[in-house]
Length: 324
Image: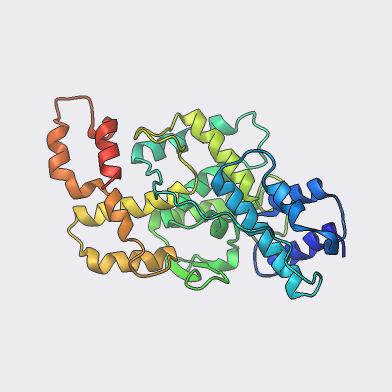
């Protein structure tokens, strides 16, 4: 078997498990272009090492490409296509602090208000209505982008107002309720979007041609929207806000609301973990450190009504809160 045939077999196997466009395919495509359509039995460690150590990339990107190639060759090894795993030694993992970006409600509004402007005249295959609905869906459910892209109309129960996420990963499959606002958004989108196409694709989120949206395409579209909307970090960190950060924003805003209304967090945080499909009932505890509602009384003293400045605009203060 040759490399291109092996990549095709791997992708089809991943799709059979429900991944419409499995993560990591760009890495396999890049390795195919680098090595050529060689026999899989002739792939050696030095070739993979040279590919990974080629153009300078971030450590996290290197680790991601390594894991992708390892999964691919493990797939081939399990099917006796190759006799040994041709992977070079893995670099020791580098620990990165958990510092996601939490959008303010005004920033969410700004993103939504600029969708049509950002998509106007762009070469994106995704229309403005779909981009807007995707942002509202991710912010309203805390779902992963991969979960949203894999969603079909069989997973939406408008009668019971529930959403079912299906996954081969333990604890990720779950059924969650829709709030009224999200129900209305999805109902309108399903009627309008699919009345304009003759495609038989049953996925909820489709591009302009009626095909399933690819993850990298949605992320590129969001990066353009974020630049147009002028949403950027103000806490001194260099990393830019991501589409994935809508998931973290959902969790933090939910906790803020619970604190404001005096809810029992010992009971609600495990429920939030299950709702988001996270591993471990205490996995949402870290979002507590990102919730400014814990210090609302103290922060209000720093932001008197007569002042136009707000505590969120204080970079030193935000950096301090992020480090708690």
